[in-house]
Amino acid sequence: MATSYRFFLTGANGYIAQHILSQLLEDGHSVRAVVRSQSKVDMLKKSFSKYVDTPQLDFAIVPDITTAGAFDAALESTPPFDIVLHTASPFFLRPIPNSDYLDPAIKGTTEVLHGITRVALSVKRVVVTSSFAAMYNMAQNPISDPPKICTNEDWNDVTLEEALATINPMFTYPASKKFAEKAAWDFVKENKVNFELAVVNPPGVYGPLFDPSQIAKPEDLNESTGLIYNGLLRPDLKSTDPVGTTFLYLYADVRDVARAHLLAATVPEAAGKRWFAVAGELSNQQVANYLREALPEKSDVIPIGEPEKGSWKPEGWYGASAPEVEKVLGLKYRSAEETIKDLAPQLLEIEKRAAASS
Image (cartoon, rainbow, N blue to C red; front, side, top):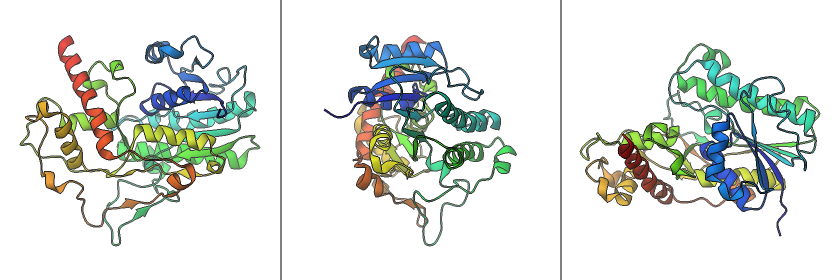
């Protein structure tokens, strides 16, 4: 039997984190799921009911991850923790005060690391969820000659000053991910720690929700799923509407991103590295094509666009290369078709539920 570990998972109610939690439990590990409120505990208890009241799953509430000592009480455990997965961080694609981005992302990360050094010296590996946004400045011109090929060595050149001077999420969100990740690497460098650090940097993350019954209406969808619904499925669209231009071609399936976290946590060679979990490229036109195939009953709503263009992207647009994720971690990626077609019926289910309750 494979080794089982004791995990501490922050932001456990998140889109990626629920898939992480599911995979950890299925693999036989024990997990303390950390969330901000009792209502989120109740939601997870419903979705993970078969593990409630078993030694495999327990919960902790940390209402404000930015306060000094925020995680200390939650990090105390018998048996003690082996691995911490820190996924908690805000993600909104709308203008919000930069303090709502930068503080939770940066202080939340440093607080969990401080907590480990104070009360959880048993922890041997920490995995932080970062982002492609920490690697590449998407506010710049995406086209160059030759095209930029992004790797795990790249860093977004956005400055803290730029982020603090605006509420434009094109600057504030990437800055929050960049400086939170930097803070983690600096912490390990500047402090005597017992643990190794690994970081996962996914691009656009799509695919099925772990439990769609949690979502009452489309407006409650997480950001990346909401983009798909609002851009290609919402009821006021017509098949003759144009398919919107693609902002980010790089993608990964949420289930594969979750698995990347588990592998980064347990593969010995994963320590001390960034893992750019990118499955390939996916255009809005491809998403529309897959949705039309998966949901024929929505053929009058989903924009047809130019189906034959499929994976076309402008010449000179940046790409990605991260073969080490498959070679070293052993991660196998799902196809984009599977990613979108597994999500499609869930979006219809949520739409129907919202209509029935209105």
